[in-house]
Amino acid sequence: MTTNETENSTYECEETLESSPDSFYLLKLYVLGTTPNSQHAIKNIKNICEEYLQGRYTLEVIDLYQQPQLAQGEQIIAIPTLIRKLPLPLRRILGDLSNAERVLVGLDIQRIK
Image (cartoon, rainbow, N blue to C red; front, side, top):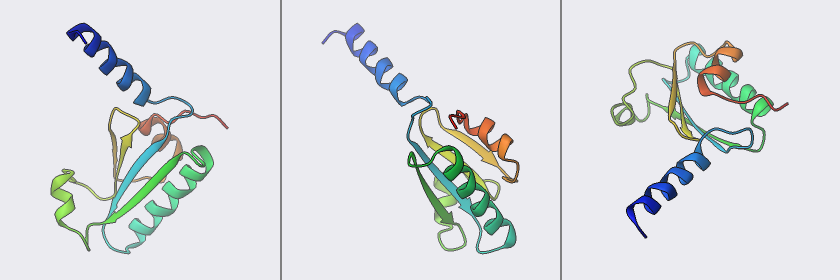
């Protein structure tokens, strides 16, 4: 395989992983304990996922109170933080997750309902 063919294959792979209406979403939500803000963020994100990504997502909730070492690895500077790992490119939303429209835009989630 030539260098040009390798570059084309890499580009096609990345293009496939980018956001499209039928993409699979891998989301990580970082919270701190069972505070009202944490519980509210979890509830809001689960509702958004069920409404707009039903059957096309995995949501991992990470409690930094129980696993503080994970904050450094992901460079978490605010709580809650929602990270879209897939589809590429990686996207982050910090702070208040109560505005569904803001979350959808921030994660570049296509409305297909």
